Image (cartoon, rainbow, N blue to C red; front, side, top):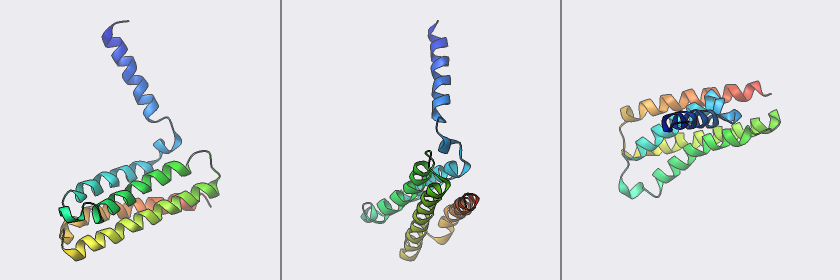
Length: 135
């Protein structure tokens, strides 16, 4: 087997293992990852004085959304998965409060927050819909 073949096989192996777990196939999980990306990008525009306060809180809350989706999907009962999705929704609402503080402090203009708020609302709707299917 040549070097290129090994590299191709290795790449195929990585692609298969990247979606090895149930949560990695969930649309809501990928929406959460996209939201995290948007939040981290927004965090870069905050003043340095908020680096270890508001920015850190915002990024941790956003990250918690995806982590709770993942944790709740691992062979749990529907009720247990629903509980973790509830925690994910609460973490999302924490990001909303952070965005409100950012807006109120004037760190980012309302127009600059519009896209991330819309993206977040779509994520929240999907989270809630998924929770409802588990009841």
